[in-house]
Picture 1: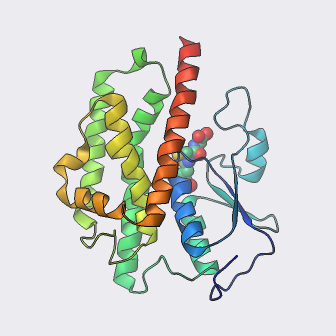
Picture 2 (picture 1 turned 90 degrees about the vertical axis):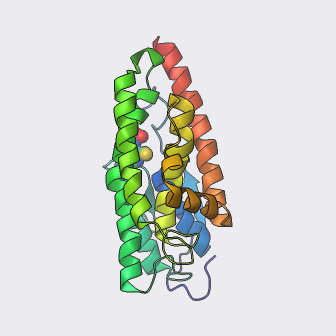
Picture 3 (picture 1 turned 180 degrees about the vertical axis):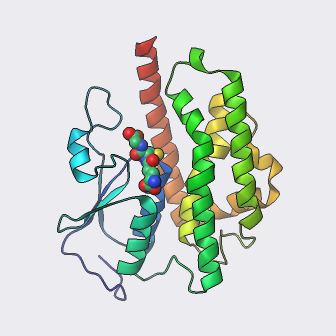
Length: 243
Ligand SMILES: N[C@@H](CCC(=O)N[C@@H](CS)C(=O)NCC(=O)O)C(=O)O
């Protein structure tokens, strides 16, 4: 199940509690796929079904968010960036963390910009999308779109120019950025009718075009897109019931 140079060997597959629509598990799946780690994907109980509660899942991860990695001996690890760093340490080959200290810092910087600024800018829109359209205030949508454009401009400053986020090969930063761009550049404009923010960001737009040709990125992006469609359908059904 592992490449011969990986140091850690599991008796059974690791488990990943996750949903396909969320960008956080997608960055973990990137490492699992790239490193050839056998994984059992589990949809957490209580997610996406209002009649259920998360009580059972909170026993696995008290933070109650996805993803959670569970090893074959039952140890559970929440938080996507921490999981990625663990997988990198436990399964070093192929490396998705540059050896050069400056390049490694760039990888972490880009990932942090996604976690701290890009996602946070999109949260008001995620919240609105879960509600009926009559609650969508144009001023809230516009303010969130402006905030998102500002956050993406940080990525524009630091993004690599050789087809990958950092250097000339896949790193954890690509896993952090690419699924966020599905939301920022495809999902938000299609749902809220706002302009594609990448139109004003040529370096990020060039990166976005190039990175989608990487086969592992293409796989996680397709999974993310399909997950979003299914999640939207569920949210639409719920909103219709709430009207
Ligand atoms: N910092 C966390 C963020 C994870 C997160 O916020 N996941 C969201 C989905 S995008 C979640 O599980 N939200 C709770 C819910 O949907 O009930 C990580 O990197 O793993």
